[in-house]
Each structure stands twice: as C-alpha cells, then as structure tokens.
Length: 274
Image 1 (tube, one colour):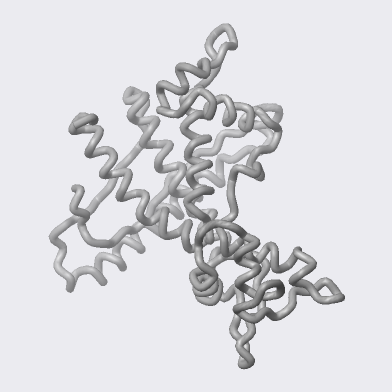
Image 2 (spheres, rainbow, N blue to C red):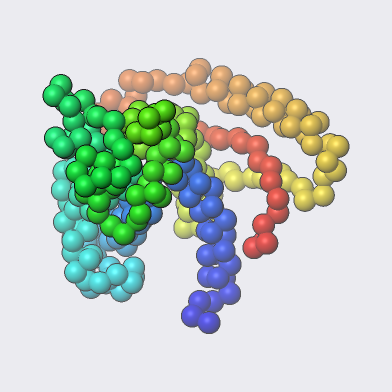
C-alpha cells in the first residue's frame, strides 16, 4: 500500500465530495479536461505557497516533487498563473458538444448568406452534422455527439430529418447563479474553515454538525420542518447582529475580509466509505 490508512480514508472522503461536484459540473457542460486543468493549476498554486521572508517562492523542482507533476508541466502552469488573466487559456479545452455548437455558429460552411447557422442533415461530406463533428476532431462518433446535443436541447431534429441548432453554448442542465453562489458562499467557505482548523487548531473556527443514521422515516418530515425553523431563527439573529455593526467606511484602504456563518440541511444514504 503506497498510502497510509489515514491517507486512504482521506481519499475516500474526497471521493464522496467529488461525486456531487462531478454531477454538477457535467450538468453545467464542464468536461474532465477543463476540470483537470483547473485542479492542476490549483495544486501547483498551493504547492508554491506564499513567498518566504526574502520574497522567494518555492522552486520548480520542489513543486514538482510535492505535486507529482513534471518540472516541465510545473513551469508551464507557473507561467500561466503569472499571466494577468489565465482563465481563458487555450489549455482549458472545450468538450466536443460545446465545440460543435461553436463551429456551427462560426464556420462559413455551416452558415447561410446572413451568417446564421443552417439546418444540417446527419450524413454528408461537407454541410452535414457528421462533417461538423469531424471538424471538431477526436475519436468520438457523430452519433454520440448528436445524442448529447439533443438531450441538452442544444439542437432539435426537424420533421424532414435535419437538425437545427437551438443554443450557442452547451449547458445540459439548468445552470444558473444559484449553483455559483452555492459554491462561492457555502462549499468554498466550509472547506476553508476545515483547512484553517487543521492548520491552526488554537484559533479554530466553529464547526458543528448534528446528524443521525437511525432517525425513523416517519420523523423525516418533522425534522425537515424543525431544522428549517431553527436555522431560520439562528440566521435571522446573526444577520441582525451583523447589520447593526457593519461600517463600510472602516475597510477603506484595506483589503476587505468576509466573515459569516453558514447553515445547511443534508439528507441521503450513508456512504460505504464511512
């Protein structure tokens, strides 16, 4: 076994966290390649850490050892991280359905005289859905891309058998601001608090959870109700406390610090990793 028992259990726990994240990313049309690049950048960013007292950052070799990546890859990502804007870097690849939609709206062969996307038959050498997918590249058959775009509402099949594009961007599910807000104000702060408590236990932030593996099914509705009522009361009380003490002018000229308390309800099967 290459990892200790604690490391194995941590990886199991991270796997549990990754399942809902993977579901949400897939639902938002995010590919594994895009996620992999972000994960790689984040690993390297955290391995570099803060500059020391002399302003020096961790060198490429040490970062490579800590992350398990090659020195060449670490150097590439460090250059990307040092750029003013790196979120649109070409190494974050579009998925094939997303790329097909992009080309359908941009390539002259698939546009009419007014510049609008034309309806496409499935087969054909030039102006067809199959030729569009071939232009995207890769080894995924056109039928699989067709199934994904139809399921996501990216295109529709017309009575004459042709396909008409309906979206410019590939977003399979109802992606909205709520998901982004959830990651920003719930998931990220919770993980930051956990990391802080591990690194600085003497100044640990509050981190409490009340749960049961043995609550009868008949009590679930009551528990949902009482937890909602109690949480609402707590959050209203804290929000009132904050609002009476906020002073926007006090942060003038300084980096603002966000503080808060989060409460959420969860329900689901006990995982086999616990």
